[in-house]
Length: 456
Ligand SMILES: Nc1ncnc2c1ncn2[C@@H]1O[C@H](COP(=O)(O)OP(=O)(O)OP(=O)(O)O)[C@@H](O)[C@H]1O
Image 1: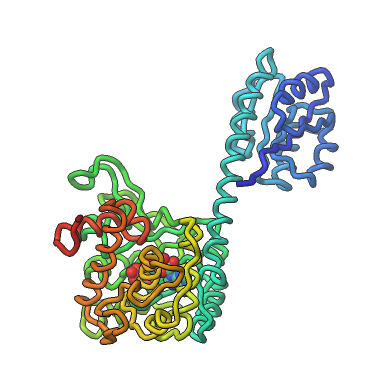
Image 2: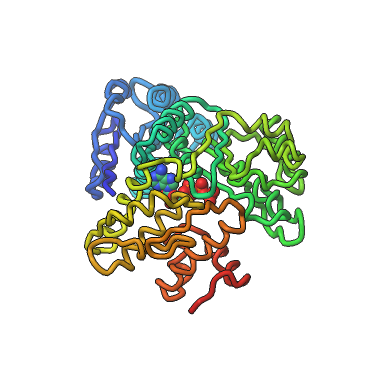
C-alpha cells in the first residue's frame, strides 16, 4: 500500500535559538519535513502549503497564541497545533485546548523531548488515518459497480444506471432477488459510490442471529441489561453512523422487532436495551430479501407501514437464468480469476459445457455458477471443461435435467451438494470451505449437524 509517511511541520518561533533547538530535535525523524517562521503573519501567509502540524509559540511579536490559533483553525480545521508557552497557566492551556489546540507545552529544558513525543503521536495518528483512507479507497474500487458487477444484458445495464441514481440520493434502498443474485454486492456498490463511502458499511443478516440477541445486536445494550450483558455494547445502528446499514433477509424480522425498527426509523434515534437515553444516528438504510415483501404484507407477516418506510428505491435483481449470455461472461471471468489465483493453467469451456450452462436454471444463481466453474477447473482432465466436470443438480453427463427447482427444499439440496463437493476438495477443512464459498462457518457446522453434508 503506497501511503505517504511524510509529515509537514511548521515551527513558528520568534526566538531564533529556540526555534533552531526544536528543529534540530524534530529533524531526527527523516519523515518530518520542517519549515521555520518567526512571525504569525509569515505562518498564516504560508498555510496554503497545508502543513499537517504546527508548533506555535504563544507570544509572538505580531500576535497572541489564541488569536493566531483561531486564524489557523479557520483556514485549516484539520491541522494539529501544539502551543508552546513561556509560562504555565492552566486556564490559558484549557482555553487553548477547547479552541482546538492539540497540546500545550511549557518552555523548559525538557520541552524539545516532550515535543518529540507529542509530534510522534500526531505522526502515528496521521499514518493510521492515511492508511485507513487508502484502504477504503481500495475497497471502494473493488466494489466499483462497473467493475464488480459483471454483465452486459439489458437487465444488468439497467441495474448499473439504478445504482448510479441510488448513489446520488440519500434514499433508502430495498433490494430483492433470489439467493445469490448479488444483493449484497449491489448494496456495497451503492455505498462505495455514494457520499458516504468514507463511512462504514455495516451488514447484518437478520436471519442468522437468534431473535433474543438481534435486538441488542441492532440497537446495543447497557451493562447489566440482561443476563450475560457484562459490558456495554454499541449497536449496529450506532456503528453505521455516517455510513450505511445493510439489513439482509429483512423479511425474517419478527413482528415485535418490526415495530421497534419502525419507531427507530421514524424518530431517527435508537435506545440501547436496558436504558440510557435516545441516541441520534445518521445511517443510510438498505435492506434485502429473497422473498416477495408485498406478499409478506398481504399474509400479515410484515407490517405495511414498515414496508413503505423501507421501500425507498426498490431494485429487483433478475435470476441468473434470465440474463442470457451473461452466464458465459461470468463463467469465463470466474474461471480466469480462479486459475490465476491458483497458478493453474487456464481452462476453456468446451462448447457442450457452454450449452449446458446456458440451459441450466441456476437456483443458487451467481454464487452457484462461481462454485460450479471453480470446481470444474479443478476436476477437468485436459485444457477444456467438459459437461461431466460441471456439478449441476440433477444432470447426468450430456443429459441435463432442466426442471427448475423453486422450492426452498431444492435450494437446500443444491447448497448441500456444492458444500459437500468443496468439503471433499479441501479435505474437510471448514475454514477453507467457508472462505472459498463466502459463507459462514456456522452454516457449514449447522449442515454437518443436520447431516446435510459430511466430512469424508
Ligand atoms: N453480477 C455479478 N458479477 C460478479 N459477481 C457477482 C455478480 N452477482 C453476484 N456476484 C457474486 O456472487 C456471490 C453472491 O453474491 P451476493 O452475496 O451479493 O448475493 P446475495 O443475493 O446477497 O445472496 P443471499 O441472498 O444468499 O444473501 C458473491 O461472491 C458475489 O461477488
